[in-house]
Length: 432
Image (cartoon, rainbow, N blue to C red; front, side, top):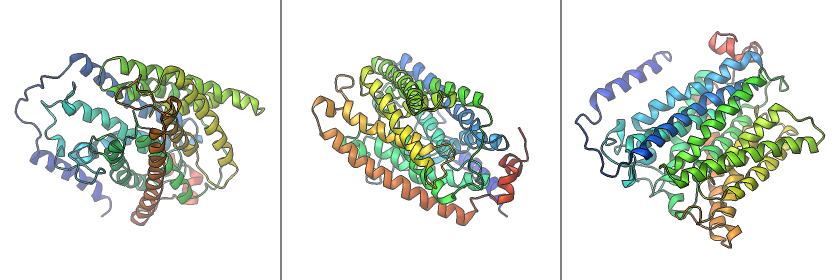
């Protein structure tokens, strides 16, 4: 019976597509459309999609050889599953007319991509359908980020259930609250340019919950399968992140250029800081360390990219790398088996980025933002402290509950025999 359920879901999707065919008449283009902005957002959307395969290589190279395929597939499959959820009702729940007190959109607004043609997003210069596809790529990569925490020990079928619940009950409320004009955090004045709160903090706290819930692997220490995969994945992530951050300007202009500049500068500073800090601790400089540092810098600058100066992004990268490195060291001394250190890198990196946005944000960079502590204003930093606590509690507790619910529906953890055999063989009957 269980084998029929996934196919039945696809049948339902087909029936919905027949009942709700979308915009069936030629739509009159909005007069505010701008060709340059549309071109940039099309490119940015493609860039962000590339990040998920990049993450697959980044994580895949870090695990044991017998788990490379399963780990990479956990990222790759998000491009399929999350896309279907987003198109059917996810985008509408995240960005439809507010009906949930600043945490939920109306599922009817854009159900099955209705009302997305011939209309500019919030009266801007790009079509709603383009904004929907751009935001989809953010939704795709967020659950993929979590996978590094429970790598090498989760059943694939159960994983699909968990990420479906996570995207609907954790990610979507945070996206609506943070980025919708009627969202709770948006109205509070919290600044998150490209997803430090929505993407990285939610994934980081879900990762910590997952590591605690699934407990330790039978054998923790291992030799990474392919360091070259990690380097390749880092390059793809860094490349795609320009769409992630600069694309969040939603226009081809100076703000996008600034976000691009702060993104690459913070990542460069973090990569070198991680390497230099390792040397200071008596370790040899490593490719793995440089790659992890670069990604931490990208994570940390994400909420700040369109609100801070390039010089401030250097500080964001350096400070975040050192703090995340220290948390990795702390985590290694505990019983928490966060396989690929998702919480220290994405969770802590996202939180550092959120706090440092409250420090270095400047209205001279983005008039729609606010001035932070560095410019003599405490208000923004105070709001970010409140949001940090609220989001952390919501993402961690909510994710832990969803893990428990998933486990009741379908056991999460593979057996000891399956873990010893490797997930590539036990879950997918494939080998590298």
